[in-house]
Length: 439
Image (cartoon, rainbow, N blue to C red; front, side, top):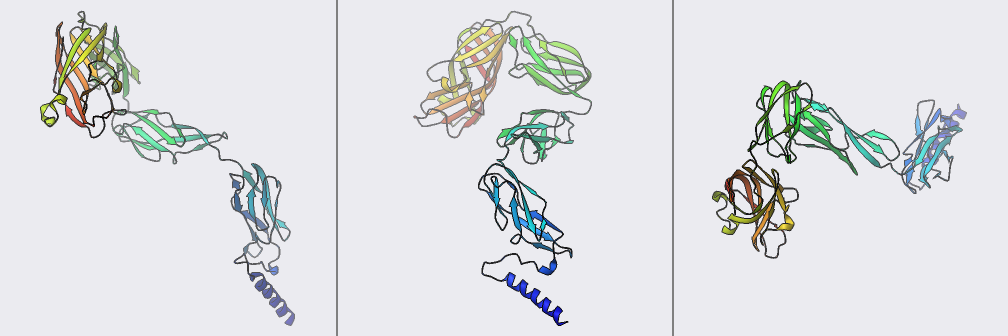
């Protein structure tokens, strides 16, 4: 009995001595009576990314009685390739070179399984792609996926990491995490970004089930035609209408089966076509005029003014403008160049497009809201700037007069005389609906 008590007292004393010292907190020494462990496990980060980086590893011993102890300070640590990494007596791993090695910990003649240590620079994102359905029904929700490709040849799902973008949001809405909901019939572009890469856009149609997109281009003998009305006059989609864009393109969403399509524009003979639609389809138009187009090439003066209701406080010189205009003509196609000492050629497009079909006239003054450039930018005084944009449609009434309606806007800026570009607060006013070209 006395021998057993003496043995127990010696064990307790050994534990007390091992826990003492002046080196601060440390894992308690494992009592000898625990015996050898059943296994050793290594914990801690073994994936390092730069030379000189350190990581504290832990050796955990599990014993037959179910106890688990941290034996990092008592284990014998070893690495297989000390040129790549070293490890201290307490398990502090330090990267020396790019490469791979293995580390083990031995305690009471039991050795852990090898833990693989890698030192490599992080793979960089080289490409980003997105996938998802080509069409979504209004009100329905669909999931899109973003996949990253990396410099080490691997790929990974990064759907939750990217920033998602969609335009227009009136057609398709992002709900978060790559989930999108159809809002209204039309077409939207979905893209994603994860530094330093962006994906190419994915075109998505929002359509009712069993309906389709019908698109095409409208032109005449001189080229593509802008602002031509294209409409469905019978069949599924009756009442749908749109106008062609600057490239003569149109698109109608929600048609199906046998439909009757019509294309029309001032000065052109109206055309109709029967189209059978059972999938997304294309139908182009080539318009003609019944009479020869007027010759309007030459020098003119363009007269435009604002609506008085919204510009009463503007200087009179900014409210009414008469701009020297040169028209070049090739067939029905017109090009406009604005001159005079007040027109700011360096900050405008320099020329604007239009057409004359028979005696129907059109002029489009462009505006780019992203870059802030106008089809017509005028500086009537050193402190007053006027940008004008919109569409003028009218009739060639004589060889010296073209009149009609102008749906457009005046933007007015008041600046310092030293300004070289219109800056500051812009004031906008609808244009007077009447325009005139005279010579």
